[in-house]
Length: 263
Ligand code: ADP
Image (cartoon, rainbow, N blue to C red; front, side, top):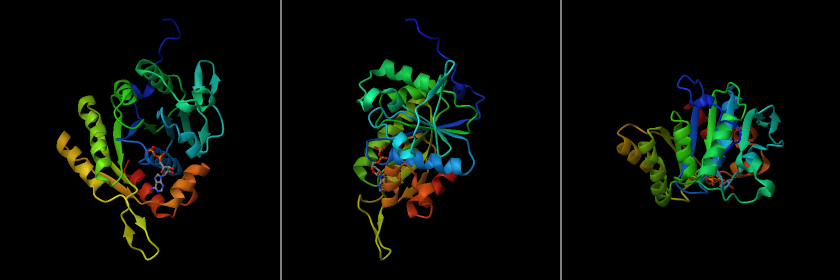
């Protein structure tokens, strides 16, 4: 069908030194993008070279959450990703005119992922985080095919219903033979002024997902951490300054740094 030949994806090489984490969730709105950008910013602040691919075709909220102010630029036949808080960022939203909803089909999405990974000049990075769309759709399958070494992080809320869908998201790892790094529970509780914790969305979802994924794959899938409900997390996302940088002492930022250190 013409066009430029596909480029080799550096992260797909068996000897790559870049760790690739695909951040997955069973459903939308559980804080997957928030977690992704905060983990990326926390790792970059620790001195790691970090890239983020926003592959959430329905959401593409990563550029706003990271405060990306520039568009990608083209040099020769490579795309240079803009930088925000020392994180290199490419988003499907950067290639969609006027923020229109994306109605791409599977093969186009596959090609887009191929370009994000092969045509973008990432340079030598230590970590690449991929913000997947919620659920177990075409993008997740494409990533598994393009990057067999990529590992999966599952984000869930404490709610049992969310936990069930997160398990489904995680169980594709069985089919794709990707490593499941662990489960992150978000919106775990709200700390009240008197120090008590109100469990707005119930409790136990993260642990339940971790346990059932462990059973499913026959290896331990840890619960990497619990992130409380925290206004600073939402405000940081809206302002383009991730909470781990803007309000580093907040409980949510502290929890996120603790998770980043395990990766
Ligand atoms: P997803 O990527 O799973 O769709 P988002 O990261 O976009 O979810 O989060 C959905 C909304 O919830 C956003 O407005 C975000 O700022 C907010 N949010 C996420 N996690 C928290 C949290 N722990 N405390 C408060 N607000 C949160």
